[in-house]
Length: 261
Ligand code: 2AM
Ligand code: CA
Ligand code: CA
Ligand code: CA
Image (cartoon, rainbow, N blue to C red; front, side, top):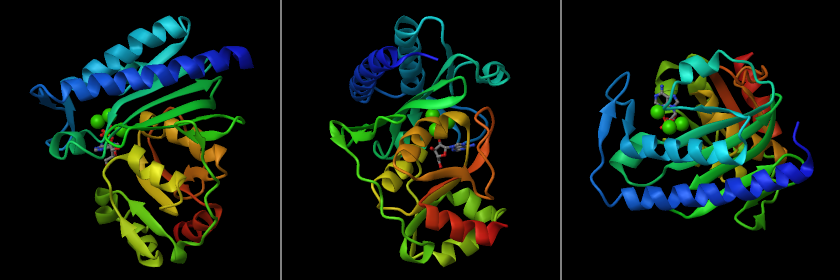
């Protein structure tokens, strides 16, 4: 476990890195995108995802040479089999790739540090709005240099919520009933951007089936603000695998778990 002096230095360098990766992203958006299909036509990867991850890996190897680095676009299958002892940096080089390709908006760059499995540092860069959301566990949550206020603990029927569209259609965990119980439903198409709305109190909750890099950073920031990050049926998150995650106020969680239990 790194000491506070080391973590402060990691935090400073990680913030600098996120701004550098944002610069690279904006620069590459002025050149033609190279788009590849992964598992299906709506599962894409671009040269920007790949170049961002490469830059992040290279810099993180300088910042924290003995750490394990996990990223969405490089050899993740192998790395997910590993345990979480020591320092693990978790990279999502473009979150919301489909938005990035189709809208050139509503996407994020995310990074987290887990120390012996403990969520410790988290970063979500809202690229087009030019804001970095970040937290260091037990040291506060910020947007840029401004401390974030704890969101009001409102109930589901008083809150807007976001649900991933595919999951809403499949309705595996009564998502349609959850949506009907809310004041309104929103869908943004990037886990990072949706979690930012929960951090700011604009959404009472967000639920989606997510991979480790989709939730690693948001979890640090959300928990620092007193929000709950668990599964949609009230189980702890397994950091090494996919989970149907719920990020929400305490009251929204209670209301959702009434429906899913
Ligand atoms: P990505 O763009 O980094 O792949 C889309 O609803 C949101 O869910 C995005 O944040 C996307 O991250 C994430 N996601 C996780 N698993 C996904 C999947 N199998 N297909 C599409 N998006 C997925
Ligand atoms: Ca992806
Ligand atoms: Ca993602
Ligand atoms: Ca991604």
